[in-house]
Image (cartoon, rainbow, N blue to C red):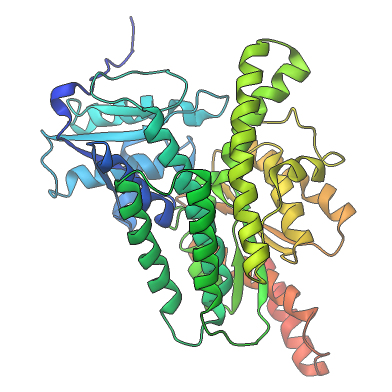
Length: 437
């Protein structure tokens, strides 16, 4: 007997429905809302957090599945249960990669959860570029894709600059206000199809960098920390218990690799597959050309940072591939694959040698390419200070933060003067206590 869940299609007469989408990257997704609305879709990025989201996920998803699946499904169903939306005029949207990661199956888990919770009539839209599922009421057009790629570049730059300015700002709140100002400005440009051509992109990137460079900042030393890991938990404050805010409260400057690198990694894997295993030359050729175009956009962003400021710019994607050749094979591409250790090495080379590896429960690929390569990286970069942190429904926030505090204590030992004996003994005792937790 078949257990296949029947799909409810998002049809043309549903175009005025509210489309709910789980949050991940606040700046990027704020712009994404604008892009979808420009093309007639009423997209709403969810902001609901708290224990109710986790409990909703635990009720509707098997607790052995990926933690990100539990959270995004929990967030969507918690929103339906909130009473804020007309459940007869609402649809849900979730990404579907089609790769080896179980993320490809989140959409099917979501549909089963909707039936279990009494919302089986709610349509779910698959956001994918491979044509895996089609809906008559939703289509990714070329102009829409171009705007979406542009907002990835803008979002990455705003995130990069915010993280390098906010810990040092003299006037509290100035950095966040400037981010909001640029989100509004870029949204207005996108509404009239501006800001997406390379010349317009170059001009905007220059203006964004110079505006952040004008913010008054303190000349003080901060502990520099990088964040890598599974893509959802790395970026989502819901998934990582507000990790960035916690690190900033501990006096750190945070660096988080951008989303454009992950997009280029996905494209490049099709090229690498052809080189390693054969297959379709045409597909490999097209993906390579897409990456060439993305590379031009990446180059504009890097040049803007280097030319108009003293901020640290990300490394080009082609350089990222070279960083891991003696650490992991490029054929390792489940989850974040070879990109994850490449991001760790890039962070180390850019001065962010204190690294938090966010590892969600149930994500075996990322435990392999994250925690599993730490020893290889430390052999080559012995100064690296890397701590893998597990995120799951049963992990307590205090234990996660204590492990990070231990990593920060080790980092500060390298930059602080030698401690008096009594204080040194106290610190060692504290570190041993944390390790026993």
